[in-house]
Image (cartoon, rainbow, N blue to C red; front, top):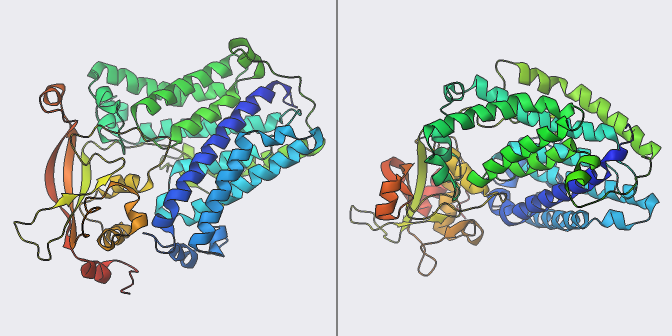
Length: 489
């Protein structure tokens, strides 16, 4: 059992799932990191390099803060992820498979650590730390014919436990609606990026929503203790977790949060369970090499020592969510949606070619890939892909001004300049076939889902009501004067 002979197939499935998520994460970085955090990004990478020491936030970009380095790192991550996804280490002779696997997983972890630590606000999500913590443990799973170390399987279950149990506790300590079982009355409508099923889930009966909320508490607070139980209890807990996360994937866009939790649930199974229910078989694994066993013991000791602060946080009445306690993101604390927003606010950005803004000015809306700007547009399916700008707009809309979001005015400046990389983050540029805008503005709206009767009559998914100006009309000159760090050149 210590050698983990019963987890060869589990490891294979886990590694493939994690490699796919790494591939997705690096594709997101390849397409979005430069306009968001590049040399001339919304939060320029020099702000990271100048604002933190390498020891505090280690990243390759601390030494080479350039768009070229960003592109090279992102596409290298895509390539290495592809090699792992294809199982290249398993093609090698027995003595080379595990060292090759360790090398590839180490490269993936180091590259993605560079993006997360330099990504500032746009990489401040719990699933970033979760991918790093999980990816670090994957380095020590081995490959080829050898069995994975059981201790590493156990540590992966520990990540899953902290993810689920932390989310359950922060809900109980957070919003009253989690205690009176009413949170799901609001969740589907006010979540960051609703998907096509969210509208229908929102209109389920209140009785169903109460059952959903109670079920959430069971899956997050009781089920996680079974991850460490003997089979088949551990596998049943894994199935419950996968089903729960699958429902969240069906009814919302949460980047790869749900997907990585599903991947982390794979180690709750064993080869015996998988072969009993699936038309697959597992080979007889060779014993885990001594050097891999030794590394697994050392990693376990490090994780146990570094788990003290996350455990203290979980047990604390002032629990914080999604926090990394070390610059390498090795052992973190997790938790999602401790509070639920009851009202949905959206920022709608508009532009005009008018050189002088009057009451007669005609404004044209910019449309985002994930945001419900157009009330008639069906909510899109985005996840597990991550639209980082759209997520930050959800946070920004919670406040009546952009004072706490220094990137927002810079984004308006990019629109006024017609910056191609910034515009690529959008679904539609209303000025694509004409001269760019002379002025842009941001308007704050209150959105709610239409009722079934309203949708049948109008075809609209959303009803919206203007509640104020987020940013009054500004020109490029205005932005250059007001936006932090903006160059007038």
